[in-house]
Amino acid sequence: GAGVSQSPSNKVTEKGKDVELRCDPISGHTALYWYRQSLGQGLEFLIYFQGNSAPDKSGLPSDRFSAERTGGSVSTLTIQRTQQEDSAVYLCASSFGRSDTIYFGEGSWLTVV
Amino acid sequence: GESVGLHLPTLSVQEGDNSIINCAYSNSASDYFIWYKQESGKGPQFIIDIRSNMDKRQGQRVTVLLNKTVKHLSLQIAATQPGDSAVYFCAEQYSSASKIIFGSGTRLSIRP
Image (tube, rainbow over all chains, first blue to last red; front, side, top):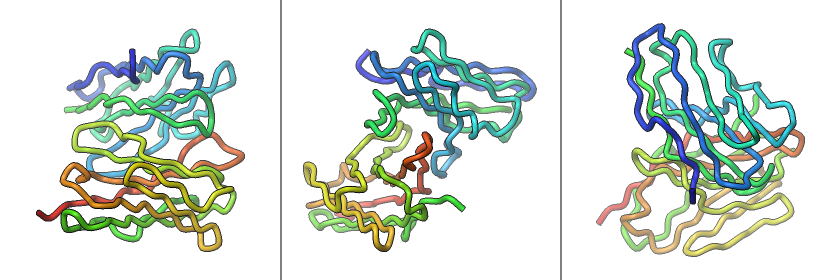
């Protein structure tokens, strides 16, 4: 596609359930980022993938959060045993490489009830 | 700690006037700076970027100024229009790290 595609666009889940959020980056982009944005707040870095290098996981808030990127393209962010404080917009972005323009998707709005 | 801060959380501008959004950064090692615009319910949209070897860069109706001496970044929007209403984020990237650090954002509102 022409842009970064994220799914689902909206997800309501019960506390304690696991959720998976998907990101399909722009074709040819080797770098992929996940950020989290709480209501009215800035963007919190979660994880960064660059080609075949080991991902930078330094922003993941707890071991309930994990992400993988298969075949250097699609990425999945998994949140296990969701908590109410996980409610936020999860944004994915991609770029050709580090310090290249980063393009964001529209985000996945997660609500934990 | 590492941070990118904004001087004003909200900015109200008369339609047609120029807007100036300011940002301070704390890490002198940062070598890449970006401005994003985020409209309600949407993902951030790239506006303009600048590298540390430059002090000014112009786009269509927008100009970014970088002052490395005082670690200050600004976004100037000429002839502000109603469609410019959004939250604007500055961001920085360090030369030795991968992640991009975002500021908390400035909301720009346009008075008719």
